[in-house]
Length: 151
Image 1 (spheres, rainbow, N blue to C red):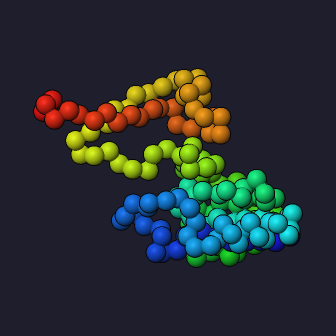
Image 2 (cartoon, rainbow, N blue to C red):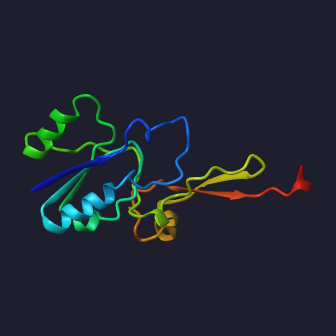
């Protein structure tokens, strides 16, 4: 088995600025692809506090999403990998499989009107791309540019 730990560091993880991409920094995707190509039992551990693009997810045996585990990360990861702990933590968000299925990452302009409406689970499930989990939030948001004459 090969275990590859990827993710963000303090330069990439921040609530103080927006990201331009959800790809892993550097050549981490290439690392995972190369290891998975020679070892069919590759487990990838993602240490990130946001959804990341995982283009290799179907090529590895397992993906463990650590979600900023803190200073006991090493011990907790060892317990999960050795089977002494069940990795049953539940993430606070739905993770998309690819950038095209990720909700928009840009904020509306200050002049835009942001509207949100509750949708039934069946509405949301029927309108979402098949790649999304059916556990996605039951609401939709849309941005409508305001005309300059409507103020």
